Image (cartoon, rainbow over all chains, first blue to last red; front, top):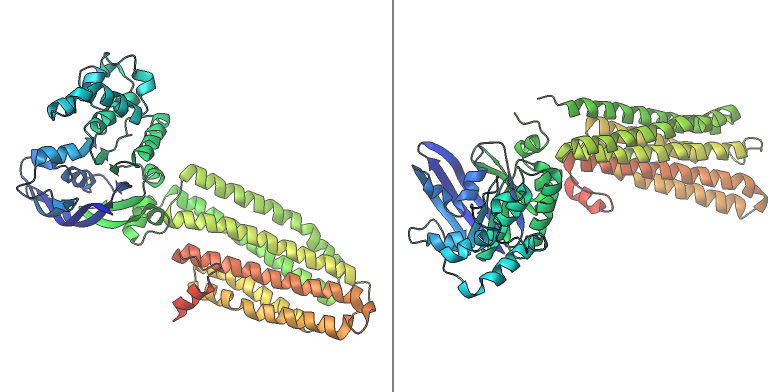
Length: 249
Length: 226
């Protein structure tokens, strides 16, 4: 079942068109990777899904983005509930300069959610990202002293605490070493059981390893979208083949 | 943009062609040894198989190395995995040529049971199929690969004909002919197996070029011809 559908989606930064007529469908509880060279529009597309681009001056969009069949680009769309439903993980982990505990409950406090169950949710969220055993006795310590991998997991736990349905991940492993990358990928596979995940990555092997579907973008267009197995063994479009085999450029 | 991987793939291509040339030579010599009742040629072909085995291992190692170092995808991945499969098929073809030579050694000191007519015909089909399957690999020629796959029936038919004749016209009538008929039966079987391996190569070529699996699905080949 489709969780996110884009129809004739176009986006301009001023006069520059960053997304051109993007039609796509992201399945529920699957991992979809978006790949493509720098500047192709993949992060822009990701940011459309929780309307992060609204924060940039001069952005204009046309078309539709349906999440659970509701157009999130509509004027009446509720951005607060959208951003609760659609969480985002960035390249470099960005914990707040607060304790581990406060990082996780931050979203709950902002959204005035489950105030009587904070401790329970902290435990659940840390368990979901496999940090509970390591951090259960250090919850009052600063999150800034964690390792990079732990920080990234904490940021994911912070999202999970507000019970989102979609996780957007923009190069979530680019600051991590291979072992930490592998563990975060394992975590993504676990999370897939409950969340719809979209990951933007430059690492083609990562896209091939972790995703169910893959979209290839080039110069603002979604050139090819399909099952990851097909995209990496028998892409239909020559531009996709050239990119994933390193001939592009 | 020329990539370093392209150089490596060219080397792999060259090695597979060398392997193909050695396997084709082995079949040719095994049939010549049979026709000419040439013990030395049969033994020489058996001895030469070690070189083919060594090259098979070298090609396999190169393919595994390329996968580990370059993590190839799409067309590159299909070329390398197909290369590995073709390599194994060629090694089996050369082994079957050795099997033929061993049958020749069993036959060579005994009087000829009958003039060889269908076996040379079958050997011509086998050699043509191996040649065409390798040509289809070199030229990435889908039509030629399909032709090889479709010609396998002819080889099966001829093998059955040889089998019926040897069993019904010779062994059933005079059991004493068995020691000369059985090696000929086996040679027909070895040649037919060579045709099967050539078919496998052609099917692998179709996958490499078109990313379409026709192995075990001959109807897919026919879909394409419509």
